Length: 85
Image 1 (cartoon, rainbow, N blue to C red):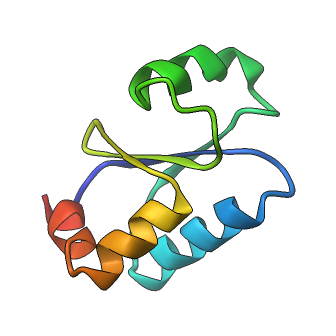
Image 2 (cartoon, rainbow, N blue to C red; image 1 turned 90 degrees about the vertical axis):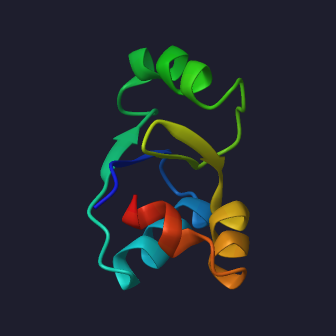
């Protein structure tokens, strides 16, 4: 199974939506709440290629974007391939 990291923040409906999709797929992930751990923001920016929106999702050290991005990957049948990797 893939190593998945979700950078999130509090009261973020996009974060909730992305995490719900991962849970439905039975994917274990590490969540890093940047509001609770502000020291992780530089790490998120480096890993997400400078993206500042939330969530930022990293699969096997590859930045895949946010909630809309993983939902699009899922619709295209590509998310399962990434998660299997």
